[in-house]
Image (cartoon, rainbow, N blue to C red; front, side, top):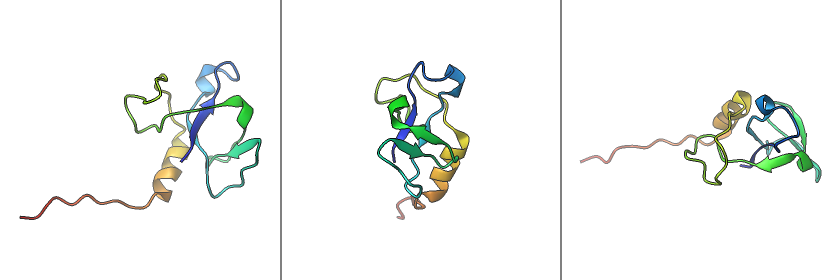
Length: 87
């Protein structure tokens, strides 16, 4: 999944939430559509770390995720169950 957020200076810092590109939505060469329904111009974006990863792997500051994007990404992901080894 491609996680992204607005590049610094494009919007107020409070609006620089981490979003995910929705593979079910149309993506053009110049834009992305996120599960929260927003359309983003690619030129205004930076790639971001997946919100669940800590510490961030790209050296970025930890950014707040868009809750709607995170919830929809979790629901769309295949279920994984870790079973303890049986003796």
